[in-house]
Image 1 (cartoon, rainbow, N blue to C red):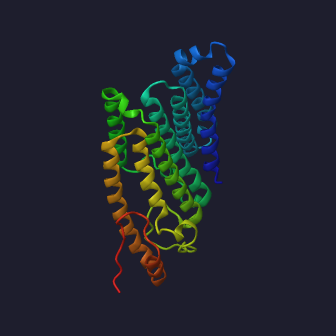
Image 2 (tube, rainbow, N blue to C red):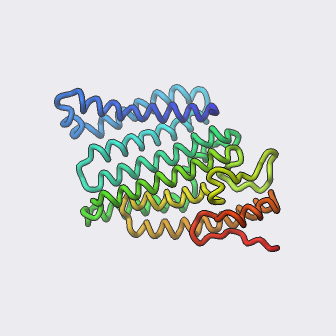
Image 3 (cartoon, one colour):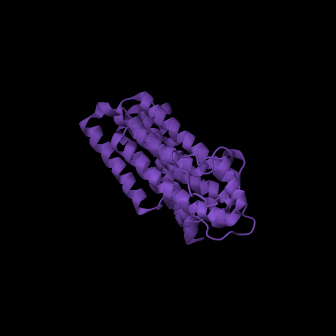
Length: 289
């Protein structure tokens, strides 16, 4: 694992220790429940500030890049910890949904960076977190939180369906496994950015998950994004995410397959004829024979 990957891992795990702290208070102190209820925010925020201060002092003097990596990774660790705490300790209808949403969101962005640091460290950058993926991605996230907040306030019973939440979580887990499986299978052939030039050693990957679909990383991300909205039980954003994600991946697959044809020629044509794209009603670039 590349140095920045190790820094990200240390920072992420350090932030997760808030889980241990709060659960120790809950289990070991006789009045732990009252402490958690009354002082939850103060305990969590204090731990986060102390963690950021320690990590900041450790990495800022070494490198600005190391500090930026550490800061992002620790925020994601805090997001995952907060999600687990809210989903397990919360008492409202919406707490489980929102907590699990924070968990899958934080885990997705952190794992993108860590897996990239393992399989293709040369392409690793702050963008590998995918936190600033695009303006549209940020707008979509804000819209989903807005819908969730409004519906939770007006129709709280709407968010209290265990099996729907479980299905959404399962869909997110499937998407994560598919995407990370694709990244680990492709290794250095995987890149977050479509490549216009074929570098030395770049090969066409057709084994593993790529034997079942041509674009497993996009398949994973597509179903993961829909799963997040099912967890939140956002009917409007669920449909919106599905349509917008489908359009995005349709255009991206079309563009990517043009470059793959230029890179691999007849080899990719044969592969495309045997294996589907993996996404519904998306066939990709239609080759002219």
